[in-house]
Image (cartoon, rainbow, N blue to C red):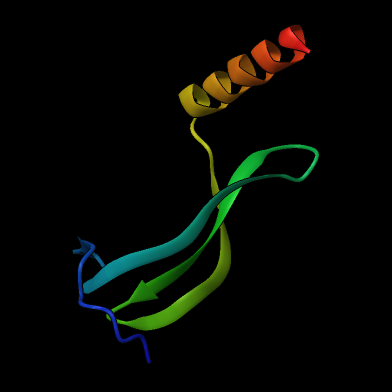
Length: 73
């Protein structure tokens, strides 16, 4: 059982509180950028290592940072 307090977003259509835990590491599978996370509904694990896509603005910023690093090396 998940022992953390019930903080998260209420999913009205399911009647549950959804919480997410992630190590916040961006991963690349050769096609897309994503973060792995565990998804809980009312404290119960429903998805382990769920892949959540990185938003386009975040991906663009990461690309910009990587290009800066390449230019300076």
